[in-house]
Each structure stands twice: as C-alpha cells, then as structure tokens.
Length: 128
Image (cartoon, rainbow, N blue to C red; front, side, top):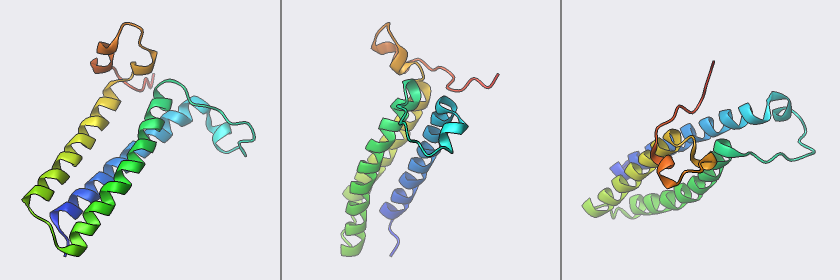
C-alpha cells in the first residue's frame, strides 16, 4: 500500500536530488572541468558557497536515510495515522524551506557583517 508518507518520502528524495545537482554544478564551477575529469591525485577542498552546500548535502543524506527507515517501517507495519502524516509533512516543509534558504544565502560563508546576511536574498550564479 502506497501511503501519503511514502509520497512525501519520494518528494524528499526529489529535493535531495535537486540539492545534489545544484551542489555539483557550483562545485564544478569552482574546481573546473579539468579537475572533475582528472584522477584527483591532489584533493581540492571547496570553499565558500559550494562548500556550504556540499556540507548541507551530506547532512541531508543522513536525515533522509533515517526518515526513509521510519516511513518504510510505518508503511510495512500499517501504522500510519494523522500524527505520522503531520510529522512527515513537517519534515518535507522543513526540507523545502532549508533548500530555499540555502539558495538565497549566497553570501553566507563570506559574510562579515553578521548573521543577518544569511537571510538577505542574493543571486547565486552570475552567468554574465
């Protein structure tokens, strides 16, 4: 039986995939295509926004794994109820909000004027 919680898990997976693509593209802009296709004998650490998105992505992997275990266990045991649905919706809303804030907080790691810069919307990619 495909529960609503499983649908929410699927949407959380899609958000993680989008976050993975954005993090990869920004990391590629920073390191360059030559490093991406090289054997990587010398590791390069990402800095700034790509590093921040990469750390957030690794945290998301851990959270998604735990959320998936819980949702699959609920579905197998057929223990879904309005409380579990609300908890899954809160998880998805928090994930969506976090993705939005990560995209808007492009000056976050370079800020020097305080924590309020995190909330200031700034374009992430300058294509010109």
